[in-house]
Image 1 (cartoon, helix red, strand yellow):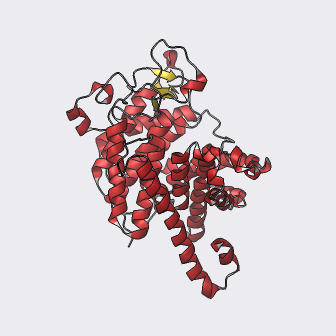
Image 2 (cartoon, rainbow, N blue to C red):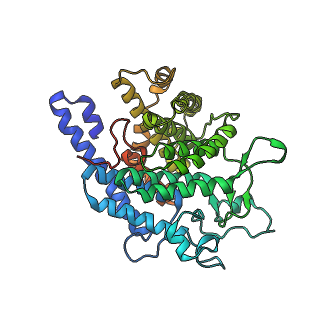
Image 3 (cartoon, rainbow, N blue to C red):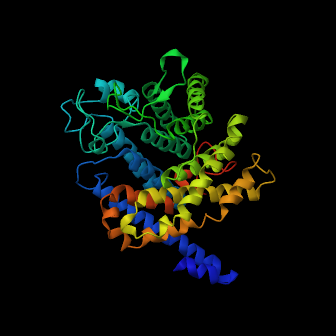
Amino acid sequence: MLKNLLEIASPADAGGLQKRFDMDRLEQVERLLEVFAERTGLTGASAPRRYLWTDAFAVCTYLSLHLEHADDKFLVRARALVDQVHDVLGAYADNDPRSGRLGARSEQEYAASPTGAGLRIGKQQPEREPGEAFDERREWDRDGQYFHYLTRWMHALERMAETTGERHYHRWAVDLALTAFAAFVHQPPGGATPRMVWKMSVDLDRPLVPSMGHHDPLDGWVLTQILLASDHGDEDERSDLRRCASVYREIFARRDLATADPLGIGGLLVDAWQLFRIGPDAEPTVSARIPELIDAAAPGLDQLVGQRQFAAAPRYRLGFRELGLATGLRAAQQLNQCLSASDSAGPARLGALLTRISGRLSLADEIEQTWLDPANRAVPSWTDHRDINDVMLAACLAPAGYLGPAPGRQSQQETSS
């Protein structure tokens, strides 16, 4: 309703309506996160129930609220969630016969590096036992470690470091990056191109799904570039990260990055934004990759729209995947605005490629409006995945904490003033 009023309002009224529209969005975000926190044991009396992907987006969205309101209570909540994730997912699950910290690490080792043995996914079913037959359907519900979930957590930790200026969050992100590289990247014999594993055991000692995720090497490369550009790094860790980045680049250089998966397309657009925003602090070759990611996202976006996938009834749709796309479209909007406001044309071809997808950017509004409707959030496709759906909706409505500031607007410690 407010969005429609904004479109027809006079310039004199538009400012007030826009402020009301923005506040309404933030109130929605606060409500979604408050219920999520109580439901999953971050607050209240319930036992903690953590899930790495969802919690990574929740941390970043708490940072959005902190930056928007200049209210430390949201930063306190983000810190508490980071600590709880490490405590719960850095240890064996209650239904696991093992106990203590992953990798049988001591409490002292854990305190020194809570991410040094990786972090569990948080699935309810225990991981497949060694020698147990593989069942693809059941594997989705089993615990273990996913590389693409670990990269999301690295990103959340680095955003904590960027926002607070506290180096230990960056150090934990780097520890996780190096641990994940050692566990998920394998060099085949005979000098063939390295490959990655999609899912590892909770102790990172054996593959559970040996196939390679479509964008896993790209995710690894982008995250290492973000960590390399950090104000909090040192030369020793940068040497290790450059080695990882080189291998990831070797892997995805031969892969077609295009996808028709909404979440994957959104990821490509977010990655393009992340590379753009770290551009001033990154190596020159990094920015040159941005058009490659936009180019890979465009055909899948055309396909989704052409097939009218977003015209289907909500009960047949997965909200969190669509909201991942919408967040990526928000990133593309920010990228477009930065280029329009700059004297620089940006990397070669980037402006033309953004023009190609500019007609699709309003799809983010359509997706948001679909899932802001309470009736649509009552269908089983939403309620069966309520935690991840609610948090992805909140992140899409307030994406600043996840996307990070534009180039030139960031310092060691972000403020909302």
